[in-house]
Amino acid sequence: MDTQAVECQRLSRRFGARAAVSDLDLKVPRGAVFGFLGSNGAGKTTTVRMMVGMLRPSAGSVQVLGLDPISQGDQVRSRCGVMLDNVGLYDRLTARQNLQFAAKIARLGTSEGRERIDELLHRVDLWERRDDKASGFSKGMRQKLGLARALISEPEMLILDEPTAGLDPASIVMVRELLVSLAQESGRTIFLCTHLLAEAQRICDRVAIMQNGHLLAIGDPNQLGSQGLPTFRLRLSGCDSELTKNLALPGGVQLSLVNRDEWRVTVATSDDIEHIVAALVGARIGVRAVIPEQVSLEEEYLRLVGGDGHE
Ligand SMILES: Nc1ncnc2c1ncn2[C@@H]1O[C@H](COP(=O)(O)OP(=O)(O)OP(=O)(O)O)[C@@H](O)[C@H]1O
Image 1: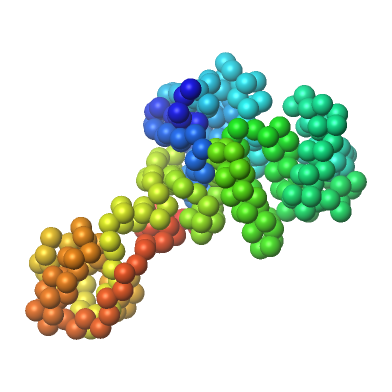
Image 2: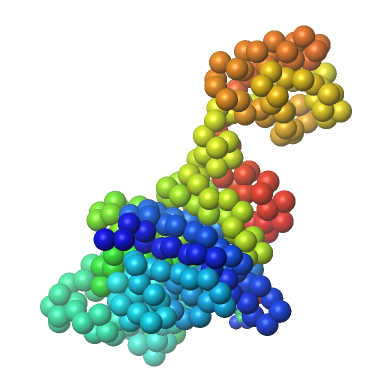
């Protein structure tokens, strides 16, 4: 069996003169909860649309569960639960009827379908509104119904574009917990496009950051900033940017400014921090605190996208 749930090789898509996705090389292992991050227009939805066979690549290739989404689109769509930006519900149908329709397409038996629909309506907190038409639903309720629809066939992979867009804080927590439990239950792969960096850090075991159609970084969301190396925040007095440029610190490490009197340094091993502190003191810089830290995904994201993340 193919060990990758998604594999893109030099995947590209142009719209006229505009390159929406450029030379994307990406591997998403089966069973991963994968966060696909990037600012508006970064190329996330275009990539997803190529993954599910809605768009043809201009160049390069993409495989999903070892299948070609264009020539084997039906198989990809029957094995993946997909929830895209425009949720695509039937407004004139009720919540329950929308799910019944999806169950029919997924070829679920009547009683199996009924049980699954009831369970999902409870799970996404729409049970009370099950017989209301989707046309009267708020954006958040439509998102929840779209998520339930994506789950109807218990797919081995979920592809979700902004599943928490428009949800209130309590519903965001509900969806997050649902995604975590779905990922744990059966080792299902989840491919999640999101703008919520704290959410991604909490639930994803791997993230990729896109900008202007290019992949900027990929890795463990907790280690992306420091590449897994020990990182410290130093509170210093008598230090400024000019001074740090001329400092020769052990291991050739550099201090980076976090705020007025706080600096960050990433070292090869935790023991190195002692030598760095000694070198700073030797340069007549006051070291008021040394705090081990984890660079947040949000900080690393903003550093990578140059503060142009619109988050
Ligand atoms: N059908 C289309 N025709 C022309 N340009 C398009 C089309 N679809 C996407 N684009 C362009 O491709 C680029 C990438 O868009 P895409 O929707 O993939 O970004 P995104 O990362 O999903 O953004 P967002 O977070 O805002 O949803 C944008 O510049 C967009 O304007």
